[in-house]
Length: 558
Image (cartoon, rainbow, N blue to C red):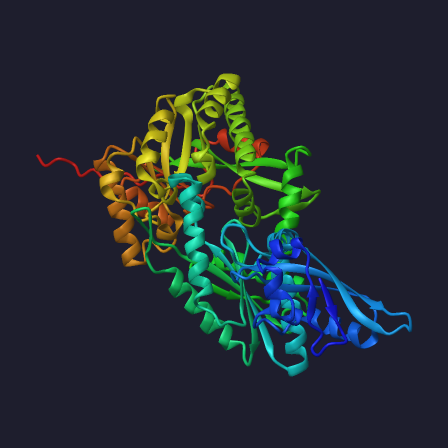
């Protein structure tokens, strides 16, 4: 394309066939017009000013323009212009060489989109989220405003993938993304940072309470029924909130602290909102440290078992033991089970740890049998994750075979809440364990809302009355009624009853009167190491136990 600067408005005086095929304009329609006609109404472009400046300075220039063909379709034009001078050095014409770079620009735009947007939902990804958070915090810092980061984690989303497949799970995530995006302002950012995790950046807030209002709005939006492929899904979410500048001065810190807060929300029972606080971050660091050390504890033989005697309520003699895990993280430094068992459960480490507990406990039980010649039951707790582990059956079978411990003397304790999570699957798993010859006990009975319809179908041998009901008997009327009812229910179903948490003679006397079969608690002994338990076995009656009173016999009347 050649234009003539000597004529008014610098008109086109020549175009070649490539121009015609690229733009769709024949030469006759282009000649005599200023090249700006290719811009249509799209005249506010940075490249135009570059070309104007080049013409003022009478120099070469290259600019990228959005041009439009005769049929109205857009093409990207990389235009280079160069002045043509006459013998006196005056610019008389401009020669323009244009290249259709539409495919290149489209490819670059695709790369940029991939770098900044989530491929599944079309929402911002972590990269773009961090950039927008940076801009939002800079603006808020200048204006004395707030920025909120809402970290949203869908509750139990894995169940959808596992039950209906990832294709359905992806459709759910897409719809969730639409709901979140539709519930915020245009200046806010909704991002998907991976899996079932979403983050919302709320810019330019006047007060922290505004973040709470939006968070509740999010829970409400997510809580509405979702129709996917003819199925209805009801979802909940946990939300962690961090505020700028209180909880962090930069995007990365805000995201980290909101993530910490969402874990706290999960601990609160899910479907909840929790704001970040510094002590929460300290707990998170402690959690990660314990998890790291737990992974090495088995290799370093830091675990040990203590044993608490299970006592016959009638005779006061030890008839069994419950194996309880202890962790000596460093010499003399015992970690409370309440601190590390939940972490082991969350991380999945409870499975190899539980395998070790089972193998060690039955081996010790076999040693005691040889030492004393007495049959002593061994109770071992199974965590929820262990109970669902497909390898559990083999683990129990192998442990019994390796030690020669009698299966009938092994009692596996499963909490009531674990069994009620999926009763039908629990019944199948219990039947498989029962086929090995072991005995089964429901731990913490009365705390997990059992359905009696399921309870009668469970192939169990005993119920363990939770210590929370034993603690106040015989003084608390409600606890007395509940404990008495559980014992009677169990006996009517042909089950044994164990009461845990027995700490005084009055509790023992009441339980004896109700014909409770077994008891355990501090009245008899705290959990002790294997060597100390040897001494307890030798006793005819456990410490703290008096001989049951005999009924008085009146002489027969003559």
